[in-house]
Amino acid sequence: MILQITIVDNENPLRRWSGRAEGGRLVIGAGETADAQVEGWPGGDLVINHDPPSNGFVLDGAEDDLRVNGESVAAGPAQLRSGDRLQIGERYSLRFMVRFETTGQQRRIGILPILVSAAIVTILIFQLGIGIWLPLAMKQESAMGMEISRQRTLMLLDLLRNGISTHSHEQTDETVIVTLGLVGEELDNMALYLRHYDERLDARQITQMHDDLQALYSILLQLVNKELYPPDQGIDLDAAMEKILAAEKETHE
Image (cartoon, rainbow, N blue to C red):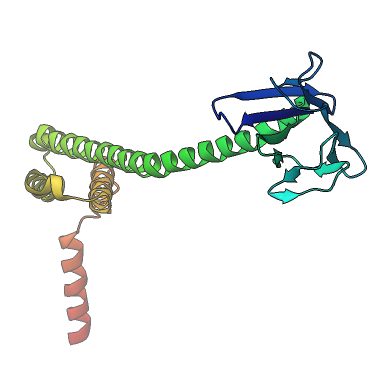
């Protein structure tokens, strides 16, 4: 605890004195032992002591002409509080202040709100950054996934068209030739559609087209493995005619 006093000479306001003392006791006077030495100070020393019972301060040694915060005070000890203004006669004005030293724990307590405020600001900035970055990242990721899906669709389309173009002339089975022609025509139509509307397709449409290509690939795979159509049983015309003639003969008999 540090006691501080500021004194102004009302006859010459430029003349000021100040003093401070630690330990709860401050002396004002003209002597060398005074904490606040005032040139031409009249009378004896004024002493301000800490008063633990009232947690205030007591001024001793004041003359009759003493005013505290503009009010006259009777002779004898006067109660003071930090921030009080005193008037000694007409000449001297005093301002009394008390400053408490900051302990390590108090400093830590004082720093704590600052740290909490800084943490809150950091969290808010982080949340703001997430709110801005996340939609952009999701949009970028969605665009990247859509581009990958488009490239896979185009690659599958080219693969199927090249396969039909390469192997269709090697076929001799009429059924296989017709089937390859139909699938090839469908693939050409899809290629033409993509050439005109590729940039306008959304993710759902690209996925649907890729699924359609997978279905055509499955048809071609079954065709190669001879699983698309049932095997040709053949027709014995001679046996059929013999059965018909035999039935007619029995009818006439």
